[in-house]
Image 1 (cartoon, rainbow, N blue to C red):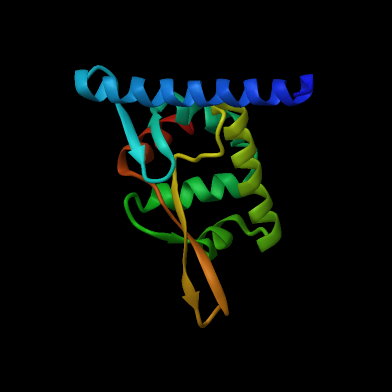
Image 2: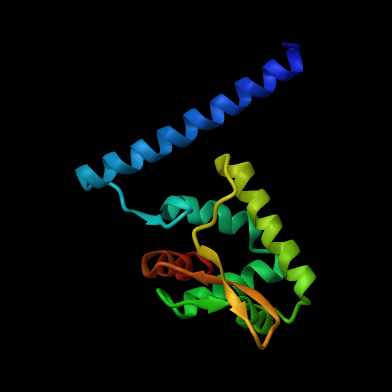
Length: 150
């Protein structure tokens, strides 16, 4: 194995260890009741501090702001990509680009492309002619975010 390939393997292993450590620390905090965190389906465990770090790194992006505003305005409820677009006033391509930037910022901070907002692809929408992305923010995350954005 050449040195660059070996380096890639080691970097990947370190990211795996960090991810496991974060998950175990979150589970321990849940067991002990010592730290507040929320498990977001398919996005992992999030703390107020992590939401703060991600927001600080991405709040300059209009599309990200719209995503957070739309989902925080209806905590625990499903929000469509169309609703986010209406709020951001960006075109679809730019909105998707800003979501990709949010993922890259998260990867840089936490070693994984994850958000404190649950997201998934909905079923085919006959009116749109395609499936639409759907989003949901946990009520606790919404509360944290509302306090952080000021």
